[in-house]
Image 1: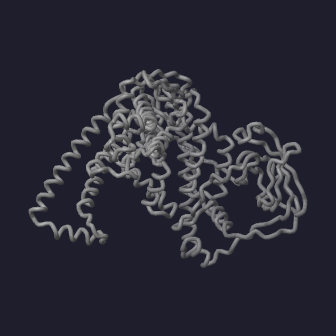
Image 2: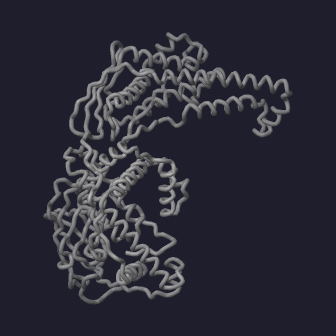
Image 3: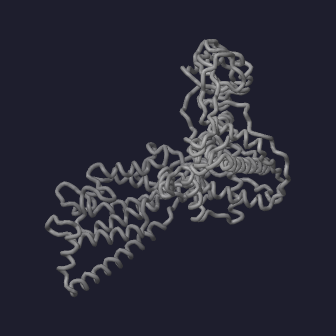
Length: 603
């Protein structure tokens, strides 16, 4: 069970048997001071609820103590201006101010000052209580390089202390038959709400104990603790003992990273490169027209696709448009020699090809198996390119002339070359740094991280100006080797993180501003909207990792020796990719590519 269940269990327990909620419950306090005390206690409890995600502690609290203090001040202000008549809030404020003479205002100011002092004292007491450590013992069993099994024993003193805090918090608003809310004797309150309080005590003790154990045992968690909340019970006597599993950052000797020799692929962008890229750009505005003849390399076919393993149908698509190229890839399979199998085909004919299911396919039984792909060709088509008219120049990016368009295409090719140089350099760094990283990574960790690694690669390619066709081909290649690619990327991350700690590399607020601005420019959103989306989805920790890794890579580059080598010429036109799985369709994982408005996009 995920630790987030603790929060839900705690909230649900408060709604049962007349137990008031922590904030804004249905049973009002007898006074504003009781409301303020309840809010302060809520803040103290929530700020203590810390769960480690990735390598960073993330608090579950939605506000801090300072925010609570300001909120209470607003509550007090509203209480003073409430009138008996249902008037507009502004009219109530005007009447309240007019009714107070200077002496009353001074008296009110003194009362506010006294209230602030009391609240500050109470908040200080709550902070001191929150800082009190649990009296616990922990046994850590090493299951693998990244897995730990932890047994925790919490003392009876702490159990009683948490019960006392819960009942003290409950007393001002607890309702017991025969008594006004908040007026029942404590022994009756404890008897009536013992079960509900026990659930909250359990949630609080587990959360605080796990957080403390991770800190005192120096465990850098890379996942959430795993345990079964339902089987853990608070004992009537004696200590509480529970167990949990946690994935942690592995321990290893940091490899030598200074003075690396890195090959840098270089190649001048020629006019022929621009011509070819311009043709691909025009192809995006081209039209597929029927061709009454045998298909040739580069032609398109509209076909019904059926994939079988023996007599069992694995996949059936009524229509796919496929370009004839040497290799056809799917998310979980590939067909080599696709051009050989389909060359010369005409509309109405059927051809077959052999596909090999990848090692990372969803269906484990079919991994590595050969299946039959049956193509019932409905039409053969050829691509007709549009004429580069002034109207098309405007549509492509408000270009005045073809020369301006060619300059934009050259800029895009330059960005793609820089991306390729960075990728090649990073691959060499990863190979060197992870050469001795022979520790195993948990399979579940690799599966969880595979989607994130794929998304990161795709977004980088989109930012660098690659086409949807190129991104699909690369994405399918990554998917078919997802676990191996993810394992390599995770090991690289752990090593780069250690270098960052060693060199004191940190993320700064301006780093997030820059990254969010770049994302906003690419997606067409405002920076504020992008930030809100990242925070809501819990992806700010991913952004932090990207910032840290980029800074460390830049540091390694600054101390590396570069050797220029010739790059592979021209873009690859060997593969056509379909965003489809043959043995388990999970839906497209490729984010929608949004073209840049300021420049043309070249392939």
